[in-house]
Amino acid sequence: MTINTADLKRMFDTIAVAIEADKNRLCQLDGVIGDADHGIAMALGFNAVRDALASLDLAATEPTALLNTAAKSFLNAVGASSGPLYATAFMRGGAAVKGKATLADADFTALFQAMSQGIKDRGKAEPGEKTMVDAWQPAAEAAAAASVASKTLAQCLEAAHAAAERGAEATRDMIAAKGRSSRLGERSLGHVDPGAASAVTVIGAIRKSLS
Ligand code: ADP
Ligand code: MG
Image (cartoon, rainbow, N blue to C red; front, top):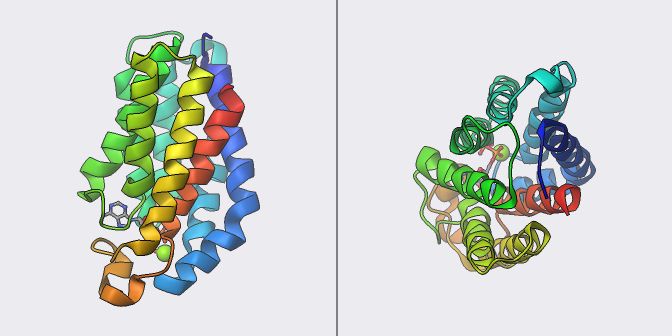
């Protein structure tokens, strides 16, 4: 499969729809161990991305520029900590495919891995600290492993989605060590991290749009 900027725009549109549909659940999850705004923040961010990409001339836009536009609009729209985390993800994803007019399967896997690494670098969270990293990192590793094993992009993203689901579920048994919910300490036990939950939704939408 070859992915062009129109495919990437469709991908962001699919994410925006999925996040909008998940908004209340994400706010509820954040209400338990945070400040109840995570669904609103993510929906604001991805709706802003959708609006920004709608006014791009796709034929004259390379993937890197599209991802930079996504990063800027997400960052400007979101005041919560998910803002800079996803903005960095898109910027790093764009940097990973710099100079390419279209993306081959392996390019997209590299982009996906760079997004995950960007979130990790920006938030300085390690796996096990009950954040979105606990969904993104296993997803990126699963996609990379499937890519190295010459799987199709659809198979890579299926593996990534499944790993993200397992990773998000595993945050239930973690004590928050980063972000707002870290103030709760042990009281954060027993609850899924909202950022890890939304990562599953984002990755699921990426899979749906590119498979
Ligand atoms: P805020 O906490 O500012 O209200 P959100 O509610 O939008 O921001 O996002 C909360 C989510 O952000 C958390 O559930 C967690 O997954 C993620 N998060 C917070 N801090 C970090 C960090 N340092 N690194 C990675 N992810 C983080
Ligand atoms: Mg919040």
